[in-house]
Image (cartoon, rainbow, N blue to C red; front, side, top):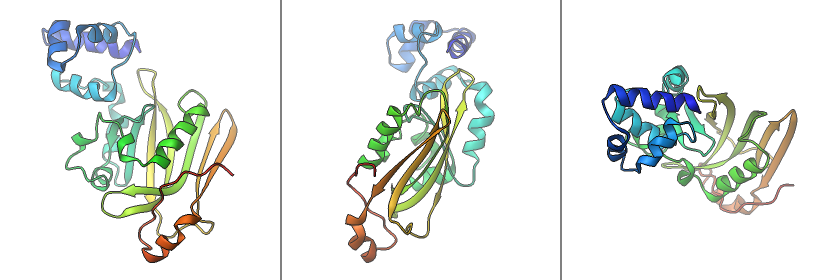
Length: 226
């Protein structure tokens, strides 16, 4: 965590800014700047973006290859921190979420774009220690809300990366599925400390809607694991 703090301090001094002046530019308390620079906490993705603008330099310099790899991906690709704040996003991801530019996603929490099923899945992943050390991968197949196409079945693969600051981030690669899985079950599988866990989510209650509108895959209720 100290690495980001040292870089903030260095860039701030290059710009001849005091902590108080930088805090004023960000609209926050000077104490936050002090805690960042001392490595007590790291700025969130939102504040990292604002810091880069205020300091006129990339804050995550050593992570740039990873960030650029995600930004330039020709498929649906995201890089999220463990609080689901967006660190990088491909152009396809920007378009699917109805954003006019990448800036509307970067630094913002992705949670509001997810429905209650995804949000509860996130809590389940937290309970399993997904956002701590030891997670090898996560694979999910479930109906997901999209801006223009309603609910679409999407398969996503989450791969953990360690950022230069020591923080954990997940690169998420997704693909749209043309057909509904035969069992009509949403599925989440992950490996934590060499142990695999699986959650199955029945969605039979939506079969009528699926037949009437095959391109949309609506789901609102969360079911218990079976």
